[in-house]
Image (cartoon, rainbow, N blue to C red; front, side, top):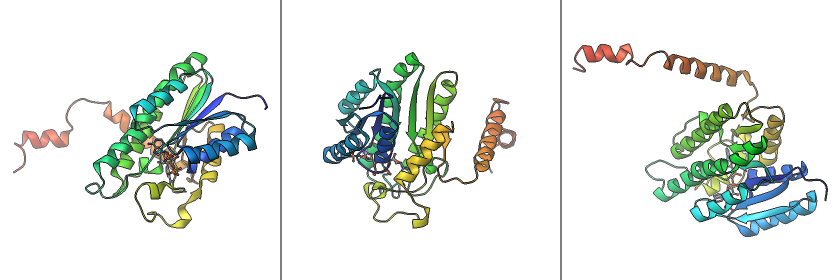
Amino acid sequence: MSYSKGVAVVTGASSGIGVAYAERLAARGYDLVLVARREDRLREVADRIGKTADRKVEILIADLAQTSDLERVEARLSNDDIQILVNNAGLGALGPAAKVSADALDRLIKINVQSLTRLTRAVLPGFLARNSGIVVNIASMIAVMPTPSGAGYSGSKAYVLNFSRSLQMELAKTGVIVQAVLPGPVRTEFFEASGMTAAPFPDELFMSADQLADAALAALDQGELVCLPSLQDLSLWDTYEAARVALSRALMQSGQPARRYSAMVDAGGPR
Ligand SMILES: NC(=O)c1ccc[n+]([C@@H]2O[C@H](COP(=O)([O-])OP(=O)(O)OC[C@H]3O[C@@H](n4cnc5c(N)ncnc54)[C@H](OP(=O)(O)O)[C@@H]3O)[C@@H](O)[C@H]2O)c1
């Protein structure tokens, strides 16, 4: 077995994008810790990668919605061999807000938001002590594209984007890197697992999980900390960012109610 670059932890590594990341990180020389619930699928992925990439691959069978399982993964992440965390596990709970079950929304928040937050928090003290480490947070293009029938999902991925961007600012002067990845549609088990019989996008909008992981890792290599893998014209993101910065500056100008409201209050309210 060749020299290891350290350990990469990939959550949701039993299918789809997580498998593609695991394969690529092993090929890049990382040993792996793969996390998911389906033991048979995870074991198959681990055995295959262990053989083809000649790397050490550990599996952690865990339901990240369960506190005791989450705590086991957090404990593993506090070990000082960890170099990369890919927070990839996620689900959609898609459908009209009044029809999606409360349980599905609860699970979505526990996986997409709570576990991603807690696993990042768990890995940071070690990364900061060593002044090195990478967190990749898988968001979605829906983070900047709120849609009907995806309210919980869109909200959760907007959280992932803002959480990651705030951390990027906080950690800017350290050797710790946080990347947010905003995939468009990817051919995986996602839509099926999210309760849809058909994907709400035309086929030509889909890329494969392999293409997605290759693009996002190329972005990471280039220092692109917010990666929109299918965005051809990057100047659109720059324009979006410039508008956000201008809005932030305007919001810092005054604490007084805007004139359009105070004029109405002065006039005695609605008639
Ligand atoms: N596919 C798309 O079009 C698309 C687009 C944008 C973003 N994304 C994001 O990409 C990420 C990966 O999704 P995917 O497309 O690869 O879908 P996928 O094939 O359904 O994979 C989801 C992974 O998450 C794991 N997972 C789900 N619930 C879990 C739980 N309670 N505990 C532990 N692991 C859990 C699943 O493993 P087990 O079932 O074995 O636990 C599976 O490995 C998600 O965050 C998703 O939001 C996907």
